[in-house]
Image (cartoon, rainbow, N blue to C red; front, top):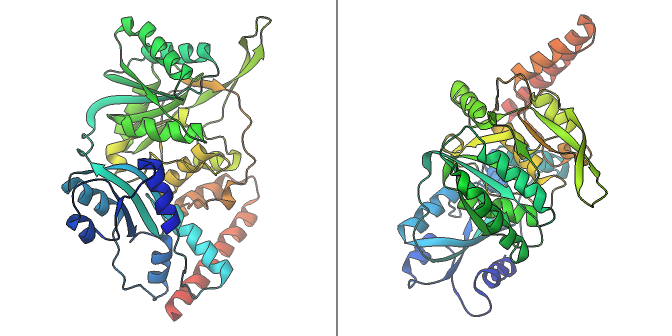
Length: 400
């Protein structure tokens, strides 16, 4: 943990000595200035597992929300954050059992599941509250295709949703200058407010996601990549779905566009494919999860950490969406036709179940059984087997 905290300090403040704290009480007693903080996490998977098997720890711990509230009271802003595992975990469980329960608890954790929360803090104001009627759209631009960026910005400028904020994240240098130029070209349309944002790092997509989501000021949030196109009714339809179902996230149907090379070196759309209806089962099976389909209501999502992608995952976006769907069901746009399109991509192999088991309700299971292309007697046998498994598990818990 010490090495991870030191690395966080170097990334945030450069080389040099920075004061440190291991608890909120220590932090409150330090002089005002830059500080590195390592806090034991009350919501860590290891701690929750210990509580589950009756071996809870007496060491003091805080939740991430408690920590952020304390920082705001002390007039400290988060410059950077990280996490670390407990170097000496103490769990009296078989390895396979511990792995399964850990994965299950991680799927239910809206924020970090790490043992220690690491923060680099500096004096500063707390983030401004979200604007309740504002739609913020984050666009990630790697610098590879200026024409694709123009298409995305023009499509957003034609949205029938106001007020609208565009936050375009790009690597520092020529790409960021191109973003500023593109925003200036579309500014005369006067349908949005826009700003360019630098996002640097080894994993650009995750860095741009985090920087853009953190900077966005709207209650309603969407994330696109340069090249994605949204039709004028896309976001109004999704807002209607959010309000109709009192949901935290809404999904729309889309199209994938096959791109072909033109003689002048640019690309053209050689064909489009409508994607299947967005029921959760097909999303999990096919793994075709793109953030362009989603609109988030950050007020309803509460503590869920939308600003963090796991850059080491095979499909960071899809993994975040699956974590969200493990907690609450998405609403769906009532539009009969697709309302956005994105360039066709090579989807990761369907191995995400090894990264995150997605919980399904008994109601979902009943619906899947009713729709299964199998004779009734086979469906009944499956239902009996599931019920037997639940009875066996209930008996194990009663014995404990």
